[in-house]
Picture 1 (cartoon, rainbow, N blue to C red):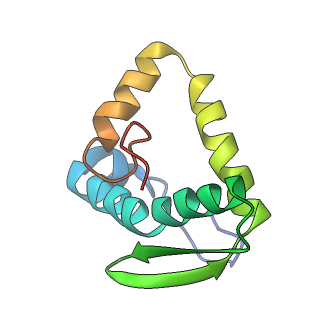
Picture 2: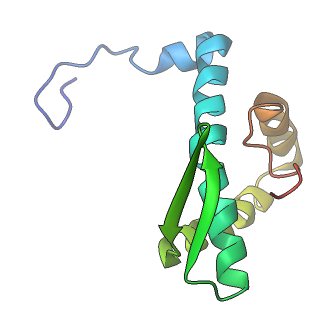
Length: 108
């Protein structure tokens, strides 16, 4: 198989995420540290009509203008998750627990 850049991709490409829980957990922790905090901070800013928000991301303070797209993502992620089967939700909760991606965590 060839990807859109014309580079040959092994047929089992991506399977390593399924067979390597350490790699998957590391990726989820990265997402929990660099993607989830901006979503939460942006959502809070949008709820209070703030023009900008500040959050600690990967150990650094980040200041950014509020973004409608991030607000849309923050709204859609829980909605899409709620549409899953209960067994799938449980599986996902178990996979993301402790990674910073768990929506049940307190909002900062």
